[in-house]
Image (cartoon, rainbow, N blue to C red; front, side, top):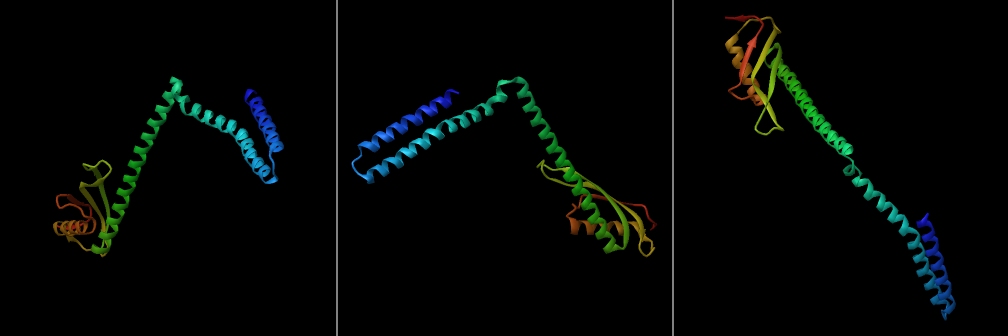
Length: 185
């Protein structure tokens, strides 16, 4: 209420000053300039308390959480939840990536070698924790050969390993195990 009364008082003073200057000005051209300048003063007088009020509310809102221990605990809890969700999202993204790579491997092996396979692998973290690579073990489960022919397990393992190395950058040291299916021994 005090701010409103101060605003009205300032506007009345500016209007009295404008009227007084208007009376003592000798020409009409000068009177127009005085009216423009005094109009600007009135606008400033009206807007200044509004800006002060807005600025004061922002300053108070920014530091409210520091005044209350409970609020600070809630803030820390929100940060912890954010970190947890970030980790969960990261893990989910890598799991999705692993599944897509497995499906791509299955499709390539099927097309190149005529095998219906299921591939299982795992991702292991690297030195850079934001990056993972295919694990040291890939298990290829042969469900069936498309034409029903039997193949030698060692030869098939070499072919599949070469294919996975060429198309997916699997390391030479990765153990690729072929299970299931019928093989010539």
